[in-house]
Image (cartoon, rainbow, N blue to C red; front, side):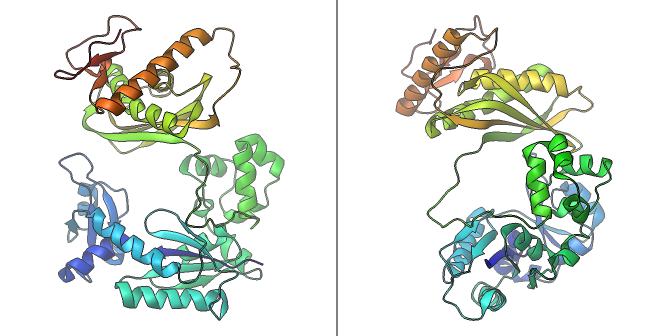
Length: 413
């Protein structure tokens, strides 16, 4: 049986800030994005702030209402990257199978580790070293697969170890809310609860055929996780998973109130998405959008593409059509995300629907490749879509890009 650890740095950003400013220690502290540029939410908080009711993702003003004594500090990402590298260096002393899950969390497969004492002993040694060498703390879950190890690291905080073995894991895990399970997102949790599935144990006992009918293959995956059947391998540092999706999002400087504003933001975001798809030499067969209104309520939706695509215009058109179907404007829009999903390698013969225009799609691909090459030579701002020029309007569909003033390029038509 494997021995998997999941190590999670406690209140990572806030703990690092307290190291650099000792006057913050023992107080309710939150690391927050700037309210001036519309990223004013809580990114991390100390245990004292957490006990006072402050939550990650809460708007700054809400956090202050919850905890009037809260001390807010700006993030310093270079510090967090430094400590993240130091953490991984410690983990690397015990195994070469160290898989990051964000900046402050990692899985470790210590099954064949030369360190003595087994998973529990290694976890406690890691805790001690991190505390003594870095001045912060970690909580570690020990189990026989990645999903349970992750659950274990969340059970006791801060600076603790939880072991979930073959004898005790069901009694400890199955009573937990189903939302605690890895990859059980808010939308899925709402649908599960509507069907009477409130705990991980309820999910584990649900017939796979029902989960398949409700959620497709993702339902089957969640069922396996709930039954402790995760066989996922911990990757080595020099390994990486195949690209599963490519996305880009932004929090807008001002609220959006109409469709035309949303279209411009989606089209701007899709420029980066299309470029990264071409860099990875993969094509999207679907698009996902994320919408967050000015009350911080979020919704997401997906749609299929009629043809595999790397085109920013095709991706943004599909995303915008999806937005118009799914968002009836209950509130102004604060943030948008567009994601290319269900990626495939370079397709051979294209299959399209009855109304698909393969020749137009191919011309679009040639144009996008040309634009990418010109930007690579002259800079990202050498060519921009005319739709994104504030005082210019598109004349025809085939005239999609204009040269920025002072560039070496003529208008593309």
